[in-house]
Length: 243
Image (cartoon, rainbow, N blue to C red):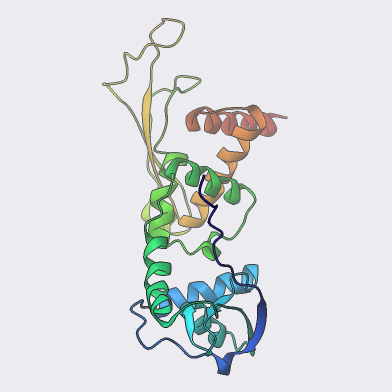
């Protein structure tokens, strides 16, 4: 058998003054003002956890955006990892590899949605994660009111819309109508189950409260379906009101 390859490793982490760091002139990676603001928000929320990677001559190999965020925050020092074992050619190559290899990662969006739901239930500020509002809306679609499947109780067709001024104040507008395509859906018992499709419009803050309530109901009662969880939330609210 051949000798096992032992990768070279950086051996130390140091604190350097921000002014000492020199951005790499050939850096092809760009950082928008919005992304730098996201990095700054992340550093404020979690701390400066990812050191900047530098060569033995004060030049940055990875972490240009983090340096920009540190300057925005008025930081005087940042942690760095010194990579003085790389050749000049390896340094140039690593600047590209560090960015490109990171881009090649993907997301398991089902698990990502579950993680976002758990954070929303804990009332964690999702703005610190770097996702845009559009990203959050798309990624949590499976948790919201559009995913009504396996309703635990049939509901009578009703139409109720909030006036525009009510919606502007955070009112929840519902459009409930029977879905003819699903009306003949068969339940596990073999009996015909009447089903309905719901749509809802609400302010983003109200939507987050609904999603947190649904996630909490799923955890408390071991429910899988969003519709079942929302029905449970409604039943608990009615029970509390009746009590």
